[in-house]
Image (cartoon, rainbow, N blue to C red):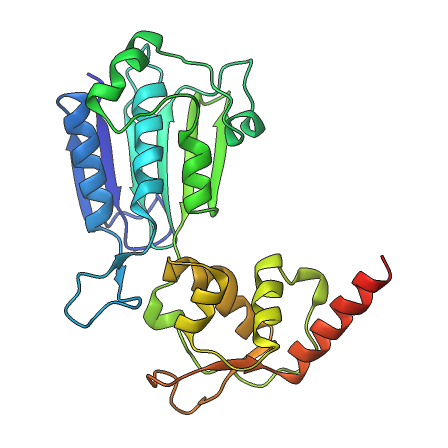
Length: 273
C-alpha cells in the first residue's frame, strides 16, 4: 500500500530513539496530502511577526512551499515500489523523501528551472482535481521562490528523491539578541547579496524590523531574520540602537563602523569594475 510515514524528532538525528509525534497516513491521495500537511504544520513553530498579540502567528516556513513539495512527492513518486513517502521533521530541517530518483533525462538544475518529465502521466492528468496541482513543472520553482533554503537531492543508488527544507532558528533565539563586540573585521567575501541590500538601505539611517522589511519588500519575517538581519548582526555589520533592551517596541538597527567600511569597499570595488 502506498502511504506516508511521518515522524517528528526532538533533535537533528534520525537515529534518535525518541520522537515528538508520529503518524502513518493512508487513504486517498487527497487525504494523504491533507493529513501530511497538517502533520508538518502542527510540528513547526509559529512566529508573531508584525501581527497582533492575539493573532495565530505566521508559520515559520511558508505554507505554499510545503504544499508544493508535498504535491511533488505524491504526484511524481515511484508507485512501482512498496516504499512509503517519508516525512521527517527535525529541529533544524524538514525532509520529504519520496521513492524514485529523477528520470535519466532530468537533473536537479532542470527541475529548479521548471523542466518536467512526468513519471505518472495518468495520475498527472487527474491530480489537479484532487490536489493543489498546477503541472507544467512550476511546483519546485514556486517552492524555491517562497523559501530558497531548500536542498534537492536525487539518489540513484537509493532510488529516492529528497527535498530538505531548512528551518529558521526559533525567533526567541534569533530575533534581537545582544551580540558581543567583534574581535576581527567582517569577512567581506562571505557577506551575502541579501546582507548587502540590507546595509545599503541602512546607509540612510536607522530603521526598525518593520521598516527594513517594507524597504526590502519582504513579507515573511522568519525569512528576513534568517537571510538578512541575523547574518548582518553576526558579522557585526549592523547593531541595535537599544542593545540593553533587545525587545523594545522602538528597537531599530543601524550600521556599525564595520558596516560603513563594508559599504565603502563595495562601492570602490564597483567603481573599479
